[in-house]
Length: 100
Image 1: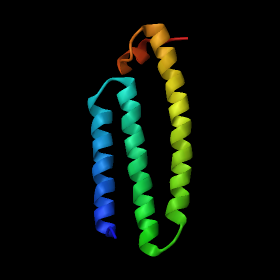
Image 2: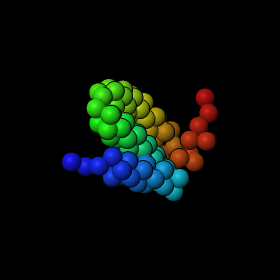
Image 3: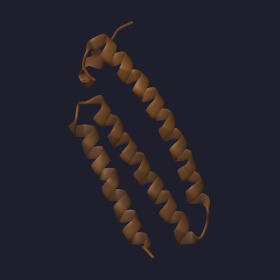
Image 4: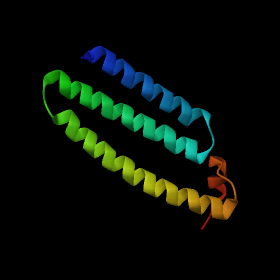
């Protein structure tokens, strides 16, 4: 059995890694992966907290997080395709030049 403290520390470390990747990289795909890591870390924190109190609320919240992550991936990939078709790059700064 994993303790609540260890689970929350793992969630915090995963969230910090995702935040670091989000702030450090300029590649759109890497930014989307960093956001996914951060959302999974939040889901892990919900599951650990729900297990601590013996309630299924954390697992229900994790299902909502998974649904949100799936929607984020589909919209993100559509934006990546539009950015690449117009700018021929996956650099986040190139999105500033998109007009129309």
